[in-house]
Amino acid sequence: METEGRYTLVGTLVLGVVALMTLAIIWLAGAADHIAYQTYTIYFRQQSLDGLAVGSPVKMRGIKVGVVDGYRFVQNGEEAVSVTARIDEGVPVHQGAAAYIKRNLVTGIAAVEIDNGPASGKPLDEAPRGERYPVIAEGSSDIDKVATAVSRLAENGAEVLAKMNILLSDDNQRAIRQTLASLNELSAHLAANKSSLDAAVQGIRDASDEFRFAGASISQAATRAEGSIVGVGDNANLALKEAVAAIAKLQKDAAEVTARIQQLSETGTLEITNLSRDVRTSADVLTNAGQRLSNPRAILFGPAKQQLGPGETLP
Image (tube, rainbow, N blue to C red):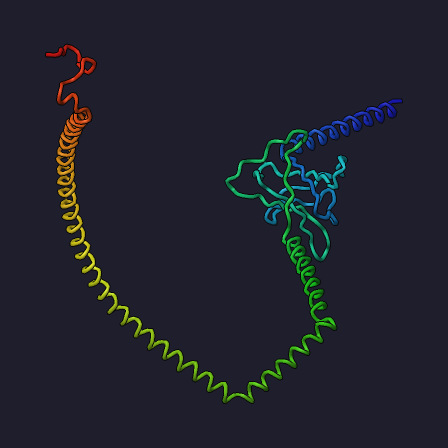
């Protein structure tokens, strides 16, 4: 009974020690994870995650700074994979950092490489709304850039080949042959008429020399004409001044003649008025005389009683 009791006590102590050690390990592991790591989320939409697994290294400038803690497919209809990365707390991750997949070409094992961006950037320590951890943006690796460039080069090469096929079609080949034949014929014709072409070229040179001499003569004539035009301009200015003076004198004489004509008109009008008044008086006298002469009896015996004016009486 005593031996069984000892075994029971030893077993109980061993189980207690194991339980305490387990609890200590769990606590230490949780505390270490909480203290030694900072967790980030990376959404990969363009890159393939072939060769990446839980525990794959997370590197920065080729140095391992963390591990891949897990991954899951995004459930909101977007074709993306959410990768959770644990990075050492002492490694600063800046805003503007980008992550991409870097794969060993021999083994095919993939790792997450982080381009930390500018050193002056602020720390990336705030999680966006709806996210549990801060989010590192997806970048692109040099291999992806080379692959993209090669793909574009292949597309451009295919396009060039298609255009070359169009260029070298049967119709275009016939047209090219006709063009070459025409060029051969033209070159033969030019070779046959080489002397005529030389003469034409010499004629063009002579004509250019004559044009050059004519240009020099025109320039000299223009210089002489400029002097003549200046002289004519001076004479024209002088003549214009004399004409202005003559016009001013003519205006003055015209004003004097107008004044004299107006004075003469006023004098003639006054004389004509006096003359018309004298003529009217003479006409009245002649009228009275005519009336008297028309009645001889009144002249001889005097006017009748009926012809007397107001206040007149017979003698």
